[in-house]
Length: 86
Image 1 (cartoon, rainbow, N blue to C red):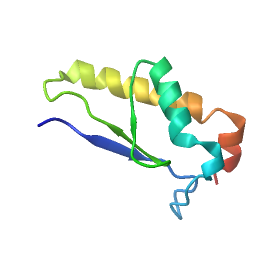
Image 2: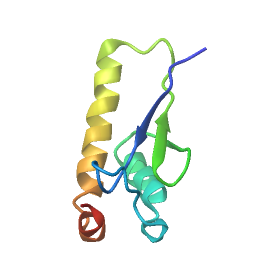
Image 3: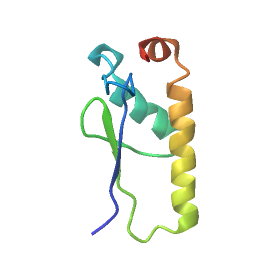
């Protein structure tokens, strides 16, 4: 047993349009997250998963989400990814 969560990254919220595969979004998300101290699992090129231990404290969950937010902010500040967003 454990915790499992996932994030779907879309280029357009209205249509749920995906990012193009040439952006290698999941790979880049993993690399950026690793640098920020959080490890993701890519379920596909646009879905990333988190699987923290079931015994995580609330403070640890807050830390994980803080690092996820930092990672997303860094990733979506990259020019090619910003251009791909609707």
